[in-house]
Amino acid sequence: MDESIFIKILKKEIPGEIVYEDNDCFAIKDINPQAPIHLLIIPKKHIAKVSDANNKDKELLGSLLLASQKIAKKFDLDDNYRLVINNGPKAGQTVFHIHIHLLGGKSLSWSPG
Ligand code: AMP
Image 1 (cartoon, rainbow, N blue to C red):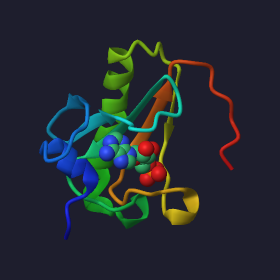
Image 2 (cartoon, protein in one colour):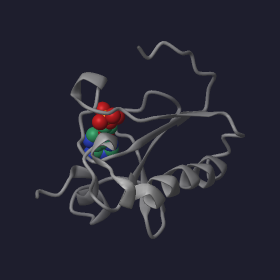
Image 3 (cartoon, rainbow, N blue to C red):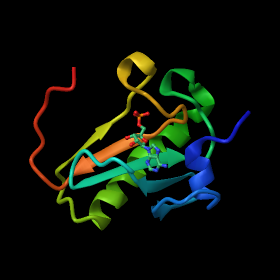
Image 4 (tube, rainbow, N blue to C red):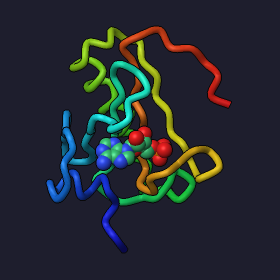
């Protein structure tokens, strides 16, 4: 399977700003930010989308949310931030490697549908 663009960033094969890393996942700055802070939290294991995950991924998926707490703290988001996962092309997914968008740094409106 081809490496995702995110794994290429992790391996420093292409540029990208890694702002967090642990055993399970890493986070980068989104190249096209939709808020003052827009990060992507990405598992090191390649899973294309949430609907492809299975029971074996339970712990890994949980670790992404726990990582989001640490990252939000690091960016002084003061418990005010949004987590978004697009699943599938019709839902706006463009990179087929699971990632959680972490958005914050301003008051966020809500009209995602
Ligand atoms: P999604 O549309 O939910 O799949 O999100 C993919 C995100 O990846 C988009 O917000 C893009 O702006 C972002 N993105 C694509 N290529 C890069 C890159 N090279 N570095 C950082 N972010 C990227």
